[in-house]
Length: 423
Image 1 (cartoon, rainbow, N blue to C red):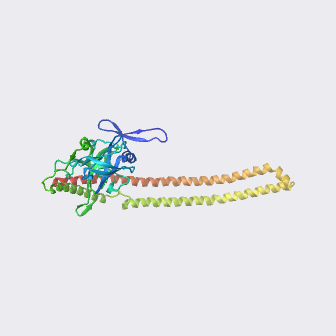
Image 2 (cartoon, rainbow, N blue to C red):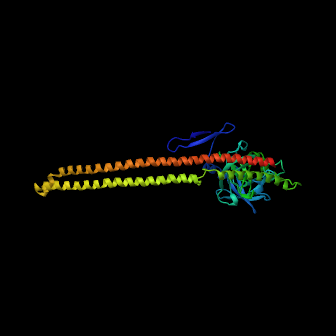
């Protein structure tokens, strides 16, 4: 990965770029850039009984095609499609594949924004991914979540018999009911999957967990199906005489092992010390630094008050002396002639005396200001040392948390693998 300066001057920006597996350089986008690039093509899909998400992947002059999950429109030939700008259209289901849980809809509106399809085959564990969709069926603005790839090539078993189902991308981006059919996006703003499924409310060792497994269909598997779907292909999920509990048991085993690993992860993280600002040791250290900073500020304020109490009376005394000197000079001049004559003949002499008096006052004020400046410099220097100590604590906390997360992740993977091997 390299950093590239996109322009020069005060508004210059640094853009991270990375070469893909084909050697092509791609720009890594931040969250705001990903949202700006993808959200205009994310749509809200609603039928008479349910709702979900989708994405416009192709737009022509008079019509556009929308990609979603088959289960979002299952049993319907039309659905209402709302764009991110609020425009609403009736979309017809032109093709679906229930085995792969993919469907294509067509709307009579052209020249619409589209998503860019990426390459799901190059995804690896730990890669950043992002999801956009209408969580819990709430229309309006699409929700944005982020996460990482937890695992690739996961078999769900929901739509086909064991051993013949599609692969899935397991990730940590929050996926709720209503997200189904929305895009899973890589760090370049490209769609690498269709968010499809999640498992909720699993009870492991008496503990109720929330959503622990989030799955997305790899976009490369979907890409090969699109031509048939656009041509009207309809593939129903096959019926089977096998007991429905067979694939469910497999899914349950996967869920339980994932959940056990997550419990082990959480338990380790809950016992790790120094990884949170709420830890007693961290709190005590930060409070000690804060107390020292408060005391330092109070001492500085007191020192400045003492400096002013020393110099301000001297300034007042000098100003009173100046006024007396100027009055005496005027009196001497008056004794030598009339008041008018004294004022006319002594203007330069009085101005000279005033200038000398003002310089005397300014000299004392300069000494006071220098003393205050030196005190503030000493205060800032000491305060900076305390802030450096505070930052060291925060850096140590971040490092300890990162190390703890690495250990916890290893424990989680081991618990998961042990669980899978025992089943």
